[in-house]
Amino acid sequence: MRLLISFAALFLSVVLLQLGLGGVAPLDAISGVVLGFSTAQIGFLGSAHFFGFFIGCWWAPRLMGEVGHSRAFAAFTAAGTLGILGHMMVVDPYAWALMRLTSGLAVAGCYTIIEAWLQAKVTNETRGRAMGLYRIVDIAGSLGAQLMIGVLEPASYLSYNILALLCCVAIFPLTLSRAEAPEMPDAPRLRPGLAWRLSPLASAGVVVSGITGAAFRMVGPLYGTEVGLRADQIALFLAAYVLGGAFAQYPVGWLADRYDRRAVLIGLSVAGAAACAATVLAAGSGTLGVFLAAGFFGFVTLPVYSVSTAHAHDYATQMERVELSAALMFLYAVGAIASPLIAALLIDGYGPSAMFVMIAVSHIGLILFGLARMRTRPAPDSRTPYTYEPRTSFLIGKLLRGRRDR
Image (cartoon, rainbow, N blue to C red; front, side, top):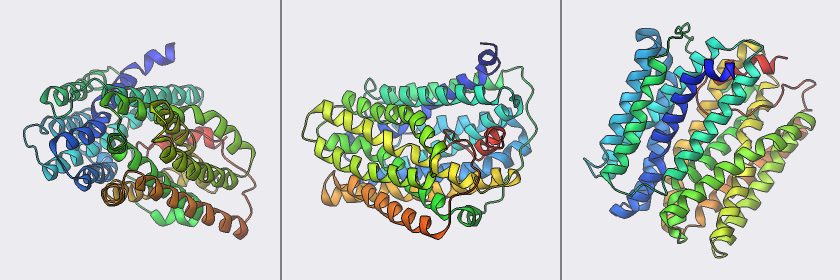
């Protein structure tokens, strides 16, 4: 309880940010349908979000160094709030893409600052419990953001205003906290080649994770609309995906700590391709079948990122962890930026099931590459403990360092 109280301000900011900024993506997709945006334009909004996220990952530590943590957090939160509020003032898909760029920027910037603050407060004794609480808070906020879509009216100024208010309120817990601001984190060098040098398979895994997660989160509401789900049912559809991923972390972590992680990753991709087929087939089996398929899809695809990063860190030294996390996040963004737009174009041309065909093909490619890599070199002699790794900021590598280096 004492640990929870000491991190209360940080965790409250995380929940409010998740509810405010995390609710924009599904609301935009549903609102875009109501406003007559094309499928490609709705997909472009998701790509813009991840482009802004990518920019924010590298700008945040530099801005913190110039103006401090609290001011930088307030600036990023204000940018996200303005992007949300502008939606119903300028109803144009390309203007919305610029606004979504600011929301992605805000997510990356705010999480970088929160995790820098968290890193300064944890010790080796409290790190495991603190990260466990952080994961629970992050997942709970994400789940709440998806469920909010069931009660927010699409293309409504009031709906976007509610999200903007939640985002704005997130400023108060952190900026009014009495806790001293931490030292400025060093900005990592962007070295995607480091990830590829240490583990080509892990690099491919995070790209596939970006393709999968971004397509489902950003274009999934459009898929739900195409297969006949109502707005409240789309909220449950997305929530089932998040819950499935949450439930998977312990069993997948148990497997990843006891068996060759390359085999676990290949197994997840086999199951991911099967989940794509099951989701497509479930479209005509009723609402419950669609929800169960989404939960299964989240169960087998969301852990891909954590297994991939754990495999990469098996080959890294302590000094390489932060830059490796930054490199892996860059590769994740590469897949995530392109994925929503491509998925939307495929849905537009070939129907809603085409998105899952794209995702299945990416996982089949990962299976083949994984089998080839297993023939190339043996598994590492020592392995870092598996842990769920949020795709939030490059500092997550430093936060998990104490656990990995045991």
